Image (cartoon, rainbow, N blue to C red; front, side, top):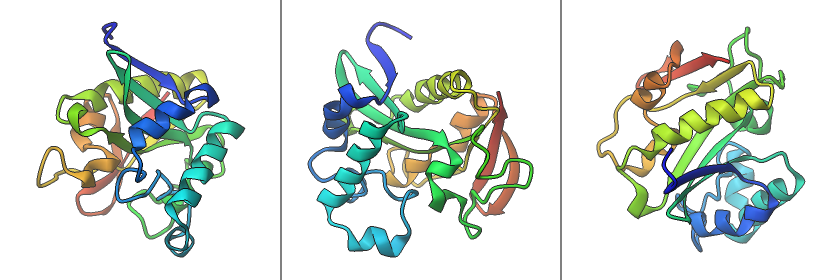
Length: 193
């Protein structure tokens, strides 16, 4: 990585950088990266401030719920990564990311990359590749044995907000293999660490 690009775990001292990346409305239509953390009805009942405060609480409590990306010292991106158990909705049996028996959601060594968010000026520059590589090293350092993702095969636009789950090609380039395809256009991919 060049000195212009830095990726670090989101620890409490960087909470304001997370707020900068998410913007005043919480990115992705006010999600605040709670989509896979809360059941849909619970999430819909919450205000944006409540979702933001939930994530700030996760940051304060630790461990880091993801990684922040900086370009030229400015926070520009976020990737949610951690144990599958931390994102219960990602483990829902009706999703493309439904856990397989050999990597159960309650195994603390089974991790997942569930979402990305890049500020508009950082999109379309291939930065998700660097984030996935940093995520692999982070998961390995934290004792993960398996890292999974359920990206999108194709999007209508390379800068589509629908790519918050990542692009299949990014994970393939990082060495992930498809282990299941429970929904069209959304493989479950895995990397053994």
